[in-house]
Length: 179
Image (cartoon, rainbow, N blue to C red):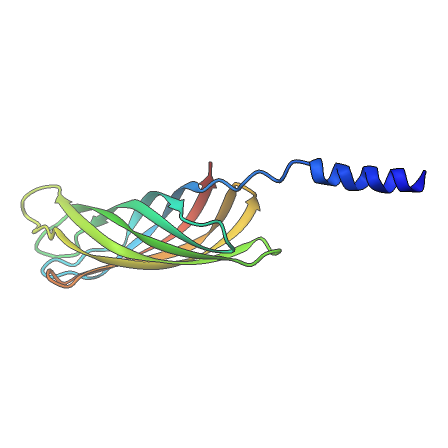
């Protein structure tokens, strides 16, 4: 009797289905502040920004490499006495790699990211010079995984265009969803 129970338990453990694999695709949304640190000609005040991105995990290990694409939009007031009440919208699109470290069994993740980016500026009228250009971005973030498919946490992303002398940073609260 004891032998049949032990044999049955061993056999049933072999027949149980493995855990489903973690989804590799993800979407990330963020709201925060866009700060332009350096910009020739008219300086800009800090502005509200939104970020939308997505990516694909290239592996499923606790140390994951991902390919990502994202876009950041922000609205700034021009800080120049000669030009009153002017606004400038910035739109930055980037693609690159992200390295995420899971601190299992804790629900915490830390990531670093970087890649190439294109930035577009659109002024309300022709009084403000726009500085469109290509550059690079890098960033860091901390995520608290509140479920197997969702995480929330602070992030910071820096953009730099050496040719046009533009530097900016985006600080946000990001929510990431895997599907």
